[in-house]
Image 1 (tube, rainbow, N blue to C red):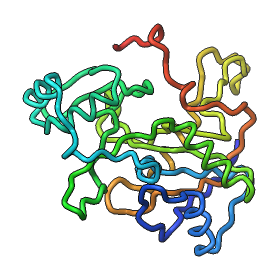
Image 2 (image 1 turned 135 degrees about the horizontal axis):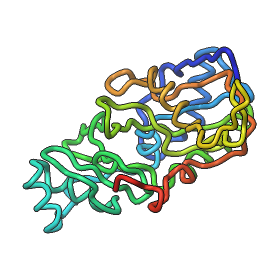
Image 3 (image 1 turned 30 degrees about the vertical axis):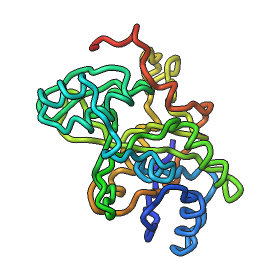
Image 4 (image 1 turned 90 degrees about the vertical axis):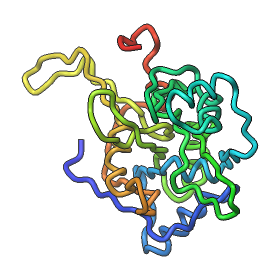
Length: 253
């Protein structure tokens, strides 16, 4: 464990567009700020700019709603085109109510609207667009990490904001990672008094994402990349995909 952490946002990053080289933008931003990456830094990147760079936008003018989308849209008071985009990236509808759909995303995440978002998605040409999650967030994190590793042996976390079923408010959550253990299993280790831990598994990547979210914000902060410095770990690397609870362990669906 460490007794001190440092977090800093990389300032002055430009608006990201499809095809942009995110690692190059990150390194240029660090250089402007007089910073360099160090071994064991973890670079936390907001999902939105990863999706933008990967061209994960959908022009709503091209979307033809299915009968199911039309029905759900009427029940929930939503644009049927948005509902169609949500359904197309989902495995199933978990719950719905007016203006909200809780979906099981095709990657296994249970989240509002399958992560489909329209905030901070510019429509300068008059076209309304929606933004989807990356196709493979762990793969995206690994690709970014591979480009940064020549500078330092860093970890990468791709973060998003999730609501929690029994609590108000959203918090940062990891949807992709590379170079770190997404979970750290403490089972079998002793506590302060020698009692052997039986169920303690730490959501390491989620805790990193939540800490970085305090700087990233969720509105007009324009700080989508945060460096977390001072972490230590000994567990093997594990992608976020391995964090998803299998159906046989799910007590609530």
